[in-house]
Length: 388
Image (cartoon, rainbow, N blue to C red; front, side, top):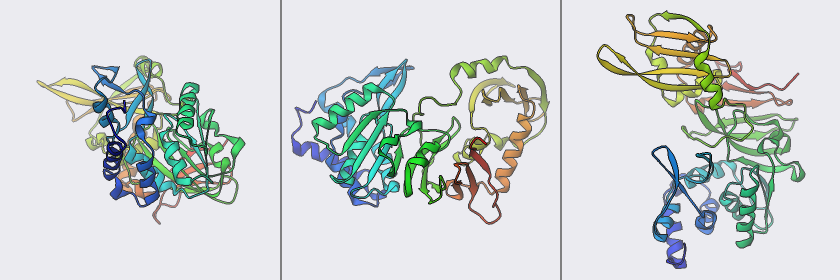
């Protein structure tokens, strides 16, 4: 793939990539690491989706190289016509590393090795005296990444096959932990393995919304505080062994018991798909999905919403009727009233953005989210409660 390119041409491609995001990055050592690590050395194949199917990308050597050095995420592995590994968007990688505040000589745990590109960038930043421990559940990915590290002579990276939710206890404690796969809350194993005053950056994500959380470990047990980065609409592949509903669970909701349709006027902006509203909603309905369907109404076609929660075994179907809108309730009859309450609370809180939330974990690992305003001192949601 690289035969058509001289070292100078490759450096030019890398420099163009760095220029595309350098203005938003504070730490020059991150930019220098991206200038040093060759992305193409970690990507042997890429996939593109066409007509619902993923296909191996073809093209000339120059076309493939130019694609690799664009500021885009690239799907690198497919299983059952679904992406199972990717190379993240470089600007997003740089933003996460900027928040992680890596320093020379630190010990870092990476959850999700993938291609190994991110681990190599971190290895450049922490330097020869530092240590990067990277884990992935996919043994084939681990084997390929290890070969790439050996080929590029990275002596300060270790890779192991392990599940991300468990972390990696052998090399604890870590000065920094970074996750490149998403989960609805911070696994307590990560808090256990993070050193006091250490930093953790991870994507918190449910089917409705996700965001990047930056956490600082406290000095008492699993105590920690955190804030969300001002970067909406991020999306990461979920950690495997998750409690989110499967496609089979979702399909089963169509046969849920039917409750009488409610016909009542309500604020149709409850279907607002803005990120701020969906982020608020995802805490109250952490396993719900918002899907849309077309419905004919008075000689026009309308796009109507469905809030579907397989875990709650509930489906709320909205459509126009003789009154402004109707909601058909299948499953839990209280779900519609709960949705109304959640929306009202969002309005009362002045439609908060990501920067208005604060994450907290107590010494036991019970995690909550609050608004960082004086009028909202009680937790808004518990993301995770430790078993009593």
